[in-house]
Image (cartoon, rainbow, N blue to C red; front, side, top):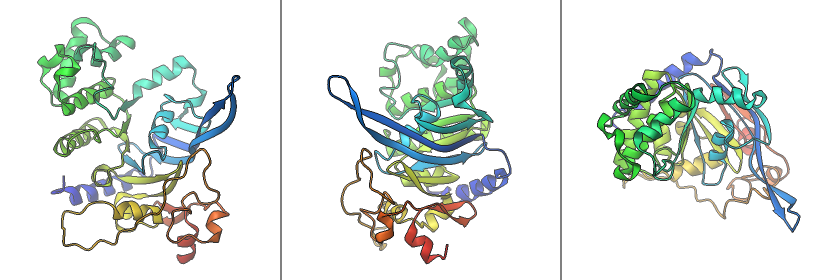
Length: 347
């Protein structure tokens, strides 16, 4: 991935700039997902886990938005709640101009043809009792698109498209390697010709060499089919390679958003700096200014007041524990939420 990474990143940046005038394919406004905590014989709700607490962003056609952060920050919940695999507590999600929360079950089922997901674990996301034909072709049957020989022919074409042999059609998931299983998952995701795909840690369970192959496949399919990706990951090197823009999450909130180039060259939020400083570098002689965070991630059951990052932040001040920081705009789509850095920049 590293040989052409810089050129590919620049090309994506120009393409992303060209799309800014377009209406977003996906708009998320103040999305919240709270999970109730119940106790007692009557299962009384005594508290809520605030997994996602006021997330907003746009995604344009043909664009990849990387969503990064530590485990438990709410990345996966964001992706699944957008697709209504998890029902949001509040907030609005607009897909291709339609508010998804206003759709009936029948209408939502129809829209799901345009929205798909690639799951993290290629072992558990495929039904071990179904053949590849059944796994990929199920969508054609459910939506009444194809059956019999036509369905079989379409599945063969999809297998070829994702780099698998068409005669693998009668195999079961246990007969494949991890990378091959993920390719089956990708074939299933693109079967109905979607326009938007949530890639939920789609390569994190794979070996590094296989990760590169799968990422290249995703980029090729994006170019060919005009796909938009919400790419959820914790591997910042992978995110830098594939993303046009990156959003950084911490404890249910987005703390910084920028183009991939801007974020990696000029990280502004102290949490973003800490994440990037932890990325391994192939040159052992290079001096890296590591930012070591103290303490553990607070619980979303009782998040800190003010800025949620302040208990671990190396530059926190008294205001950080008292007031929630607003998003500060640096221009060119670069935004961050930090009292101290905003004051330094005169914002």
